[in-house]
Length: 432
Image 1 (cartoon, rainbow, N blue to C red):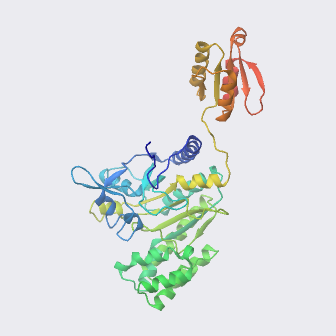
Image 2 (cartoon, rainbow, N blue to C red; image 1 turned 135 degrees about the horizontal axis):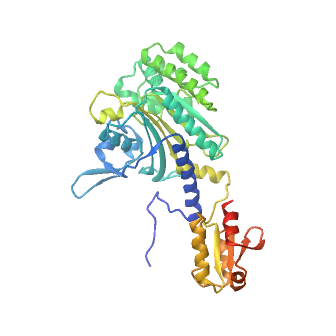
Image 3 (cartoon, one colour; image 1 turned 90 degrees about the vertical axis):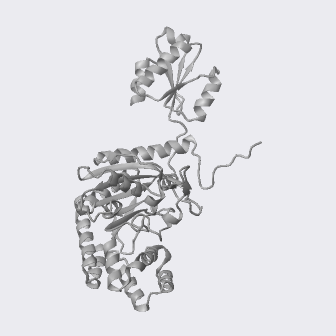
């Protein structure tokens, strides 16, 4: 007998999980379109050079280290995409004559050849809305307003953490960190919330920073509970152009978010995001009062990556966010939402009336009602066991007596109540 095994870090999804995932994806998709985003699709495979470009993942990034590499029959180096942003930038670079602003969304699986642990897999689904061609912080506010709308529809209580990479670059300028060493330092700064101040101090020391540099870095990146006070502190500490610009953009974005009535936004100056391509605001979304500590959505502004692919100094201002369907599904499980075992709403049981029953099933389907029927020729008892096992809400019996009365017997599987009704009444009831 063959020893069947699934590839490490990959998963199958039975109906009760796939239905929930699809419902989450549908809610997110509807919200994207509510805000005026249009769909596109990009391939799972990209040329490795596209993924590995220094302005894409960056050589120090975990994303590049964890990229699945392969070679095709023409000896070309390829890679499985590690996110949806880099392929989207390649898409815009190949189709640069869009009317700005270009608002799109993309959905699909991405891949990381990283360590396996609880909640972390090597294939996971993301859904990304992005806006290209808008410099204004209004575009970033639109993204975050959409984000809050989506989590509100899913019934989640979340906090949106916000920062700006120009603030981080401003701090790097002020403590004289060379350009070539900055990204390595930023990776350490991004750990401040999770790893704590002492661990980050130690890590920065190991990376060769001096005590006075580390002291100023820590003082700049400490987050307070009041957004305005944290920004006021940075205004005092940062005197260079880049840092001032980052503070100004953050204040502008917070003003726009207030206009959108977006709540629960916290300014966290240590938030860096691990990828090299961010140039302005960056954001991560976390569950409140949850066992899930990782972010459930994250993104930011990346104004230079598209122009870099085209080898031009022209900027293509862009911003977006990524929703992790896997971690959102885990969050729903934590909230103990009831999982559906079937998409079927009504199951038709023929009692010697196959031809007539098929007509009824097709009528129900024509009305947009998810309907199934017995194709195995089972008795009433076994059919009811089947319906019950898949938690289908309604069953319809069609026998000789029902045909004579020009009615069917509708059974509510939850209450057990049965009644004789017309097919028209079944349609009306189930549509309600």
